[in-house]
Image 1 (cartoon, rainbow, N blue to C red):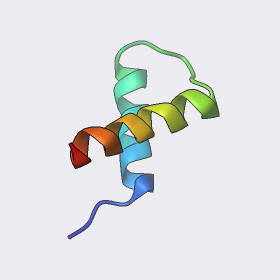
Image 2: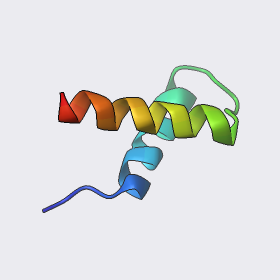
Image 3: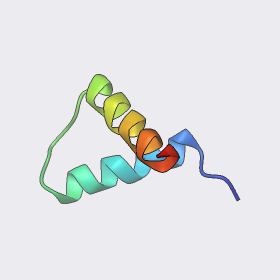
Image 4: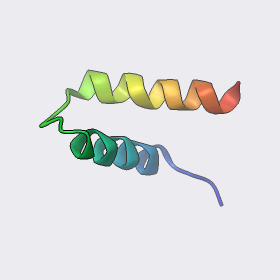
Length: 42
């Protein structure tokens, strides 16, 4: 089973909300998903 970018974005958003962030910008979400991908490939 593969994980889609949408699954990763949803996970990141849930973690941010749980940490107390009210909202994050689309650019910040894109950067965090990019970092997740880079970490996975390393």
